[in-house]
Length: 188
Image (tube, rainbow, N blue to C red; front, side, top):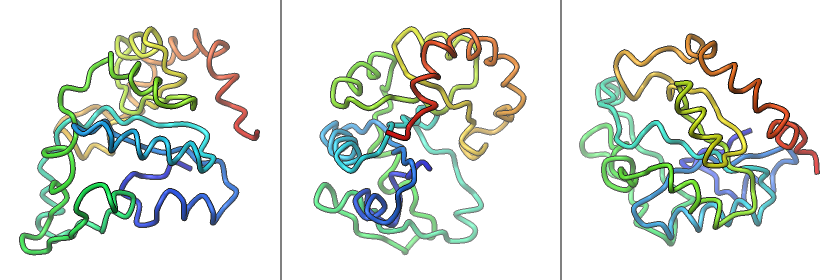
């Protein structure tokens, strides 16, 4: 399973509640100490990989969330790092601590090296939709890619993930023996 950074349970609570193979989903924040804290906690708790989400440098306008007055859950993983006060005044408050204010919009390929420097865990890149990005991901040393369009909630007209698999599949097959053998066995 991949634990969301937005989980209503902490990294530690989830780790102590199950023996499942766990990955941790993260973003790179403007305050790198926040990202480092989350990644290092996941590593200490026995998570098997870090899944860096790269397809959301800014949040899309989530009109359903606004219409339904979606309330941001309390961000338990961030307690002690930033304010986790939940505001319900204006309906959807999902952007209050996310892409538009906290995520590092300057995220680039060089940041993979930074992430690898703070953890010994494999790094998977989530949000790859093109052959070119898959090639670049392998060149910068990621251990795996997740073909994803973020549930098509981020950008209008983004292609369905299934439709880009054929474009990315040859690269996955070409590098598969190099990295997938390591990623397929997370039992240790």
